[in-house]
Amino acid sequence: MKILLDTCELLWLATDASELSEKAKQVFQNPNNAIYLSGVSIWEMLVKHQVGKLPFPTAAEAFIRRQCERHFIGLSAFR
Image (cartoon, rainbow, N blue to C red; front, top):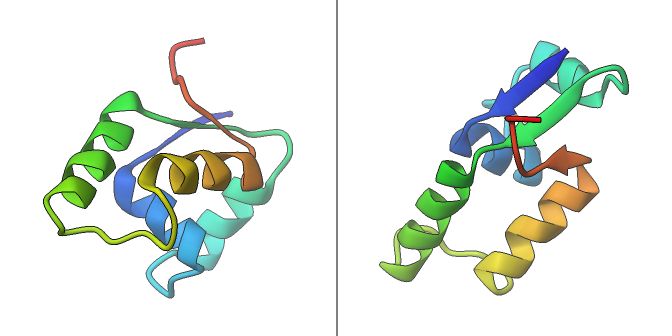
């Protein structure tokens, strides 16, 4: 199954937030599923970071890239 994360889901996944349900975690961890992040979500996070509304522990681009690698998330839902 192809899954498209929204911005909040990526951030919840990255921080192991309680808002992310156990069912969602199972879906994201299932190797049979292809997980993707929209370019719009990346843009949204970068803009919010630039205006000071979304702090990251490292450079924003590096943080997003690392989380995608860590959680096996592709960067395009249109494959």
